[in-house]
Image 1 (cartoon, rainbow, N blue to C red):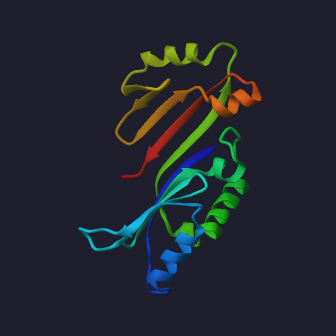
Image 2 (cartoon, rainbow, N blue to C red):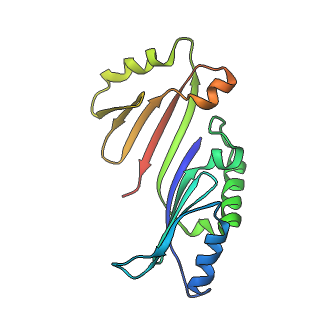
Amino acid sequence: MIDSIYSKANIDTQKKPYNYIYNAIRDGLTEIIDEGISSHLNQPFLTGKLENFHVFIRGNTLRFNGSLCKYLLGENVSTLSKDQIDAALKKLTQQMGFPVQQATLSRIDIATNLPVQQAPELYIGCLETMQNANLINWKGTKTFKRSRESLTFYKQLRELLLLELECITIMVVLIRM
């Protein structure tokens, strides 16, 4: 399933004025974290959230990232269908006030949950023998990283505890350079 997306877009001011686009995005946010004019670039900036999505505007550049599943369903354990992914992107476009299909995808996280018989930590520990990648241990996760992709294994705690399942989450991260 597609879990998280990281996107970047240029704010095109040929069809609509910059302030109109900026205010439409600002008005769609559920939380404004910081806003102002940068002192060194003399350009507006905005940092905020749209539910679980992080939204950043710096000058004419819009960036946004977050989990589509969590945004649409309120949890990130389920596997989204193509129709649900389309619905999440449509909802994001409507709430953000910006056509997200104009953005360039810079990173995509693809994940799945595997039910297991034993404690997930037992399986995750066995993965340390993988070759040809740098191993990064961080807060119970094991990430095997190469130049533009990584493979991460971890125990999905919060949502899976509610479902009383023992699962390992496998996440593949692909980065566009």
